[in-house]
Length: 357
Image (cartoon, rainbow, N blue to C red; front, side, top):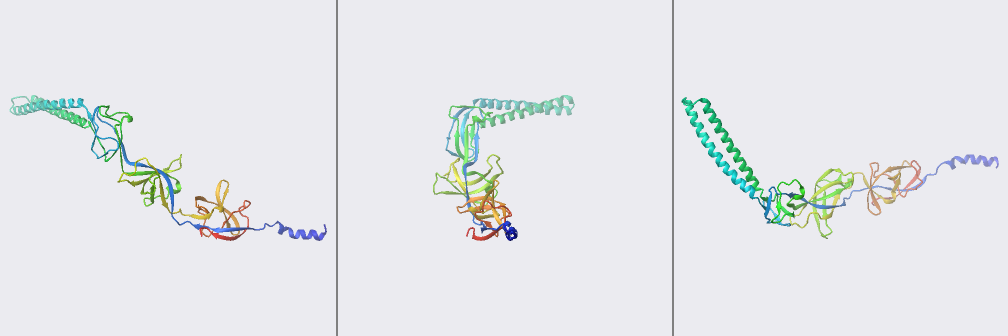
């Protein structure tokens, strides 16, 4: 090699070592401004339900209702024959009469003794004893009357009544069955009732949906069994916490069911019409890159590559919703970034299209 060749090589080495900027195509993110419908599965539930137990022990004498019947609050569901209570009540009423008679005699005697004591005809001690005896017997009258009231209340328990307006959804007793009052086991309920003129629709909402729901959120519920129909619903309440097992929050909506079209326990789908979350943009699918297990996009800033983390949203076909606090409408996002690109690499960017246009 001649000295001239060596000199030329030394002069051109820095240029050869310098990295040539890579040509890339970029797009500008398009802010997601269109409301979209998010579908979640759920199930109808009665807005009010109860298991009804017998408070009285005895034999079922009448059962005027059955499953599917609609009843009003206070309507009789069953009549329990409780002869023991009836006999005890008769005895208690007789005891009241006896106690009243004794108390009247004692009061009359005490009043006479008080007059005689003033005339010094009887001692003061004797008068006070008769007054105390009269007061004791009058207290016995009150005790006897309280026992009558207690037994009358127990007698009322012989009629099992509906606690609210609703539909009988279950029954476990028939005429002739023996029932035990105030049972300690929940398995011995007599009737089950539901109020279904209004229904809850319960769903497990993922964080991206749950955190954006308000009572004003528009929603419509659909059921496979009722094609072509949708039922407007209103967000009622939520559990305000995410289940650690499922990662979802329980959200309840209210459905009007005045015509009793919908039964409780029916599965369906609710569609929430939601605006995109702040910082949500539309980008072509081929802008996303998976790096170290995270979804990222490559930006061009000051002629160099910069990677930022993004949260992917719904896939809308050629585009995808992504959310990031670092993404701006004027950002230059690299399309189909080269796998060899590294943060800080120099690039020559040329705009391709604007996402969403």
